[in-house]
Length: 216
Image (cartoon, rainbow, N blue to C red; front, top):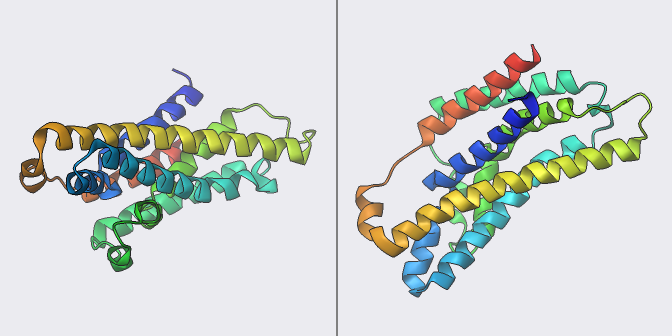
């Protein structure tokens, strides 16, 4: 498996992990469906969560895709991003509390909630080292490439990474939400709840560490 393929699988794997994590919102979709007693509400809630997550990924990745210095200083930027991701993971290992402002967002605004929780927990930041690694696998003659072409290619790549990641997140989270709503019910939520905060923090450290290793 070449480097580019491995990195794209990392994009998918991180999306699946985000989708499975209850902290990313699939229990809210189940709750909405149970309250409105219909699968339509489940699909609507999952769509809102997906939109919010996609916007959060784009908000983090797009600025990097528009950096003129990305071609010349790509290695240094990836080093800095890797260290930042590792630092966030270490911080979340020590500071376990969820941001209080998330509790003030009404349940009816799932897209906004999804966007804020993804930003607060570094979901988009996790993708930055992976995205920069993919950029490095694309052969581009930076010295002769026009700036508009270079930035356009990076923007398209950033969009692809955000979309693929969000699709993986939506499918995995949606599958669990549909299973809980259709078969497992509220007992699973009360007895089978699992907290992935510790694993989330470790995953940030692992992703940052692997990206750092690949650069160094």
